[in-house]
Image 1 (cartoon, protein in one colour):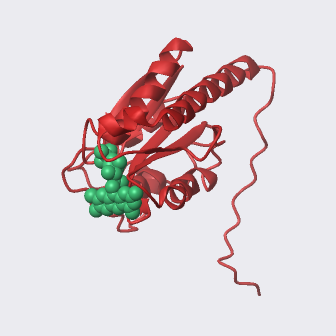
Image 2: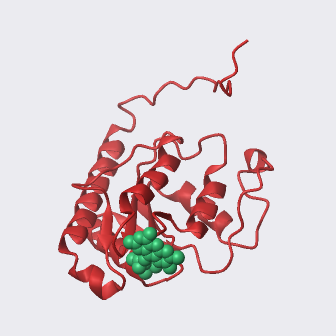
Length: 207
Ligand SMILES: Cc1cc2nc3c(=O)[nH]c(=O)nc-3n(C[C@H](O)[C@H](O)[C@H](O)COP(=O)(O)O)c2cc1C
């Protein structure tokens, strides 16, 4: 079992990384592997809604980290997306990254447990957290939760280390993720997968 930990910050070893590292350590203690994947700090372009990913499973733009991200999403048993809070939202680069990772309409990540975490200096954490969770809830991904809305506070990794409640929230989240993955593993071959209907998209138009 392995969990993909996405660091959506431009800082490879900043506050978001510090929170994700606490999750990684706890997952290791629970016998679950993980890797931290940094989306990078080079430009990530937005989705242009061409729809080609529906046929190929990949994005037509190849110059950034999105297609590598798609491969890792597919390979992982569980996913945690981390972002710093910018103006009470996830930062722009991680939104551009996730818009393109998730625009594959066939729901390739369905039933993969997921969670988001955010890092902020002072405010806007729960709004950013809500925004990230929307990617999972439109994609049939069960959300793993913790004892509070998943945030750490700090402007530097050292400050995050002093946010003892924030770090505990990360550890609880990791243990809950490990437990859910183990439950899913045990259920394989015993509990049938949910029935799938063909998607209906009415765009609110009724004839
Ligand atoms: C452009 C920008 C906007 C920010 N907006 C907020 C904000 O709305 N609320 C907040 O508490 N912190 C805000 N911050 C601070 C970061 O969220 C905070 O320092 C975070 O922990 C940095 O994480 P990182 O080291 O992983 O990049 C902002 C930082 C930047 C650069």
